[in-house]
Structures are given as structure tokens and as C-alpha cells.
Amino acid sequence: MNRTLWKCTGAFTPMSYRIAIVIGMILTSAIGFGLSYLMGLASALIVAPISLIVVLFVDYFAFSGISVRREKCMEMMKSSVYGREIIGKALKTDTILKIVTVLLCFAGCIVGCVMSGAGVLFVLAVMFTTMALTVLVLIFTRRKGLSMAVQMMLTYLGVTLLDGVMLGLLYAVLNAAEEEAQGISTLDIIVWAITLGMACLTVLLGFLLYRDCIRGYESGFLDRSEKEA
Image 1: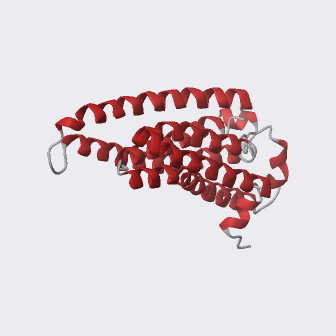
Image 2: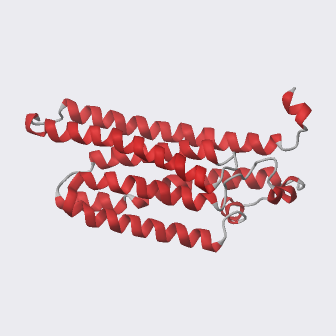
């Protein structure tokens, strides 16, 4: 049977999930838009952890532990010949939606910085770094069936690391602003390199996340002795 990507994703994401994602995106984007007038580029440092936590918190209720061997809700899916097709399409679509969600969370911040003349290069660097970090945290939490407390703790540690890196980059941007010459400066090239590098890393980690969840799903068909062999 030919099932669309949206139908497969809908099997794991009820209406409440979609509403929560939309509300989270709107609020985060609105916060970024308002702060961009007060803080300029630094507003991205506040939007980053908020958007990351929004994505991971909502993801916990739909996909966390989705392919863990002990997960009872997957028994019916594994008994169907279409189970792998459905879960595969759902995971592909969700990975793309996670990236789009972070982008929309930063939309207000991007628009605000453009309108205030602050520029958006630094915001884009923070945004793609947030995307990569979000997918990286999901790799370590989604298939492990971790509790909400543990997942939020890992998220907090990840956000702390993200803020440290971005604060250092922002400090470099502000201190080098007076020394910038006309045209593209060395600093601009570095920030562009970071931005493009994080974008590529996001795509790579998204593929690894998909493969990790599928591998976990397939391993659920094996006995312990077969898995150890």
C-alpha cells in the first residue's frame, strides 16, 4: 500500500502534538522579534535554547523511545508487514519538520534584526548550530527511552555548550567591528564558514538520526542471543 509521508507522520503525532509545536514556534518567534529590537544580534542567544527545548519537549511525547525493544506501543507496528514503511516515512518527515521548526522559531529574530539593521549572519550561524545540536541530542535520547528528567538534563548541558560557543563568537564579532574594512572581512568569512559547516552537519546528523532509529526498530525483531552474535 502506498502511504504518504504526512499520513505516516500523523500515525505518531496527534493533533495536540501539532498544536503544541505551532504554539511553541509562534511564541519563540515572537520573543525573538521583540528582543531583536532591544538586543540586536544577541537576541539569537536567547532564542536558541528556547527553540531547542520546545522541539525536544514536544518530541518526547511522540518519538522518544519509539524503537526501544521494551516499548509496548510498537508491538502492533512490528506485527504489520507495513510497519517498517510507516515508521521509516514518519521518521524522514519528522526529521525535516524538526529543522523547519527551528527555522520558524528563529523567523521573528531574523526579521527583527533585518528591520533594525543589525544584519542576520550571526543569527544564521546560531540557528544552524541550534539545528545541529537539536538533532544530536535526539540521537542520544530518542532510541534510548530516557526519562523526561534525564532528557531535559542533557538538553540543559547542550544549551550551555551552545551558549558558550555563541557568546564567544558574539564577543569576537563585537570586538572586531571597529576594525572591519570595507567589503567582506576575515571575520565575515569565518562566520559564513561556521554557518555552512553547521548546515552540512545538520543534514549529516539528520541522516544518522534516521538510521539509528530504524536500526533500533529492526533490532527489536531479534532475540538477545542473535543481537549479541
